[in-house]
Length: 423
Image 1 (tube, rainbow, N blue to C red):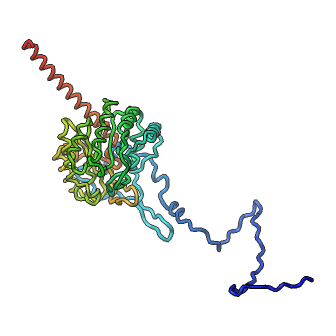
Image 2: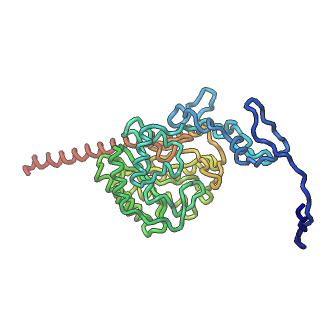
Image 3: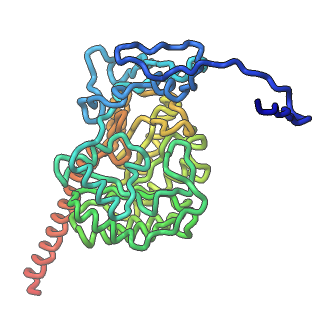
């Protein structure tokens, strides 16, 4: 029998505790045997999965769009346009979040649900944009009409709003989802040429150009904007161009520069009523400054069509909208559009009210009665809504045709006088 070795232990260790022997449990089981569930075993919390399951379903975001192009038609039960409804239709709500921290949210109304874009034109335009390193406000601002505008039945019916000077803005409006920075990247000197080439390739009849605000540049990017318009007109003379510009920090000479570059429609958005402007827009943008931009653009070129857009659902009152429309008519603004404000992310302003299609139709009629040349009004209408562009395109062509006829008549009269006088 071997000698028994003495057991040594450290002076600073804890007493040795003998553990009971535990029989190992095999993880194998028969194929027909149901596994036993031990209720005492704690599982990992599934907070994100619980929140996802409690949230809106996929069908809440995808449905058939409204039948009307601008707003739902009035039914026999709706009040007349002179007496708009004072209360909104009841909206659906839902409780989301984990079981111990439920919160109530408002579901998206049915008239704001749009289909997922899948058309060939949409895929083609998106591919061209990525290949030429171009940006669109349709994507950056998460526009709900991207399927409708990019997915036209043919090339001439599809429209896209090109966003110039990069995808980063120097301003931080509380409604906009475009990235912001005090020092954005420098301008791409090849962007005007690439933009003109892409638009020529698409063969569009009407294009909208917009840009981020670039307060870091001395001219606010006005020369870059004007150069892009001139390149487009050189490559596609028959294409109509709408420019949706910023306020250039109040420098009206830059407005003259862009307006005189060959564009057909000058657009600048007031965004909301004057009383809400300080809370909605960046502090460097004011309602009165926007009015001065539109007024200057109107007088910069004969026959210039001016346009502005307004968001509803931010908490504005009826009287404030009336006053805003009167101010726009004083400076002879031709076109106004109304659309529903939709919160891009939780960091942005919340939606105060989901305005019904009936109320949008009411304001459309009122704007036309006030003398506006055209008004597009509906929950999904945005500043570059393609149905509005089709109408504006016809107006511009008629005006140009009228000027051509007038010019021909003047030339004919001069020629007649020469013949009479024997010149």
